[in-house]
Amino acid sequence: MATGDTIHLAAQTGCALRLARGETLRVISPTGEQVADVAAFAAADPREWLSTGRTVDYAGSIYVGTGSVLYSNRSTALLTITADTAGRHDLLLSPCSAEMFERLYGIEGHHPSCFENLATSLEPLGVAPDAIPTTLNLFMVVTPDPHTGRIDIGRPSSRPGDHVDLRAEVDLLVGVTACSAELTNNGTLKPIDVEILRGGS
Amino acid sequence: MATGDTIHLAAQTGCALRLARGETLRVISPTGEQVADVAAFAAADPREWLSTGRTVDYAGSIYVGTGSVLYSNRSTALLTITADTAGRHDLLLSPCSAEMFERLYGIEGHHPSCFENLATSLEPLGVAPDAIPTTLNLFMVVTPDPHTGRIDIGRPSSRPGDHVDLRAEVDLLVGVTACSAELTNNGTLKPIDVEILRGGS
Image (tube, rainbow over all chains, first blue to last red):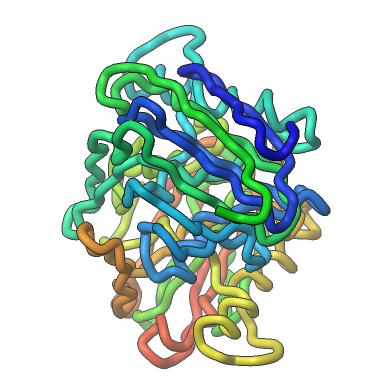
């Protein structure tokens, strides 16, 4: 994809792209109320991956927003959030998968999923499906109860046009989805737009 | 390790072992106030790993205890917690690493870490260091503020002799540590005991 291009992700689809150091990935929720899962890997060695566990530890928080740095399993800064008009995102949950739809919602057989969309998009870039870790789930509102631990999945944080800018701190391979889960996107399936901005936002 | 043996993990050390389906791993905090990080991989294909993100999603909770099932990235049930005398454990944070000690505590140079102990123990069994994901951190008390997202790391939940029993649902490779972080173990470094019980607890 040329810098400056926009990728329109239809509902329940995904893409993968190369993001050079210094470039910014803008992830937009054009209609609002839609989650976008993001996975990232170092282009120089895709065995290095965006680790939500390291990111939570270094942030001292399960939430991230403008100014937050997203770290790899090797403690490298991979991405910095340079803009965030929505304000809430999730670092706790795995991307939805066909098995998740069957187990949690009783949907048997094939159902599109963020996991499948990340896996099929990233595999040609050299990332195996089993290497996809817990994702950064943009616009997803997951709130834990500190006493019981129970999580509440709320309506996505994005209003129409809300976006998050992610600046690459190293050359990256990035996967992005328009989430496939009806129930966690307030009942309807919506698109996501992805832009690469040269030189930051 | 023969079934029935006990491994005594000195403070700031770790081990890896094979756990057959139906066997139970008992992780004991003999002195109390000590965290044990656990990583697990399918013995048949170590590319399948214990996923904290999937486990939180299926549990609907960031906390686990007796009866909880720990799932893989492929949604396979890997382990079931059949006993838990402590009551609180963590699924959010990566194992401590030398980089973490430098970044969060200003300790330069080498510092023993759960990550290093898992990596060196698991590598001979065919698990690469980069494949170590966010761990199940037994006895670790990490409490998020639902409004700000800030996490509070409290005194470990274990009193002397507290233990957790983890029954293998498939053949596994398991790494276990006696955590290396002074500050998150109430100021002192303590051992962990590990036993394999045939036929469950």
